[in-house]
Image (cartoon, rainbow, N blue to C red; front, side, top):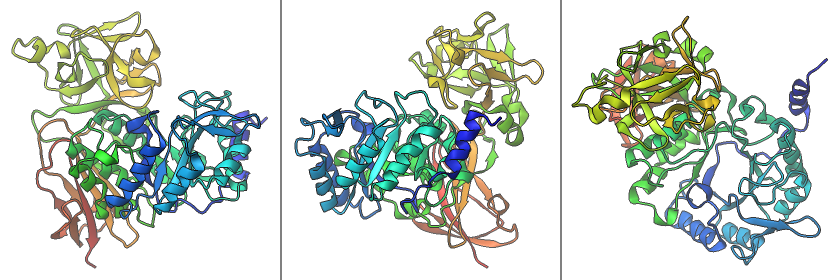
Length: 525
């Protein structure tokens, strides 16, 4: 007998496909949520639209102005959705007209549940009514969230709105935001124009990397008309350095991710504007071939004092691409250290941070060294065999799969839940999360990302992921599918400068920690 879930997947695959002709390249625009949350009103949206045009962002390709959660407050007696009259006294149709008058497009937000994530009225059971009113208001884009549902799987709920939008008579970009819960990349190409592969991003380096790492696993499922979405951009919100924002933008660009600005564009710095408007980098994202770039090569740092990220990674996936020693660990009960088999370095709370969600890295062991930061206590742990917690001797916090989701780990107040329980596998020396069975894994510090472009070139990203120092990175032509004996012209996209012709490989100048060099590599013959 066919299982219910198999039946649903069959249904999704053979029911009406998305039929709007949109999303031939990843969407570009602005969204209110990352910076403003619920603090939105029509004046803000008007000012944002004016700024998008006035600063050249519209000319660079940013076209959608998207209202996220909290624009709606109720339904009327006929069930029609009502905008907040205090925040939007002129109404949504007037605001849509204003945005359209600036030659931009307008987007709204709803949810495939009874209420939105902020507790506002959502669209479950009202899909046709809402789709028709969006079309009547000349809305161009719908972001569709996944809070407060009836318990049915996304594969059931999301096609309903797809069909309602199709029947509305207006092409409306359909942006699915089910947070990667049921791996939408595997089934959503017939449902949405884009689909979130991850949980929500935050304006932190670790969050950004965690999202793009997950997104990378689904690179082969994206293409014109349907894109993997690791969430909106945080560029300009202040939680990362300008160089880290360049890295963030570069990773989204080469990954063919939606480029949806999430900052206050009316107050952005010159550096933020320069990052968001680099036309050569945007051209990689918008290339009509539509092949998502991905990680193609890795290397270990050559620095003796490297600081390295530690994540939880699918053990079966990592086994084929990551050296086994990178997920092997030993606990030294004498000094309380947890040491990596790759090089003997220690699991460490970065910068002796005692705050919640402190970052976990791998650094040179200095446990019990009175001259070390916090006397090395940030490298000392206790294992509770009853709760299976790994507890820091620095602050009593537990090793934690952050937010019960993704690949990031942190030190967090102990909660006696599965995201803080760990199995020590004596057979393969792995440490596995009880929450999801994933392996504690040392990331390699040097990454090369690449993807083909429509004119035969390769976009290449040289990424120093390490937490300390700077060093050169070499990309071999064989890493990117080019013959090793051929010459190629190399152009630096951020410097907007052609670097010369190279045969077989290219070695960069030193690239700083958390920084990138983005290249266009074109064979000469």
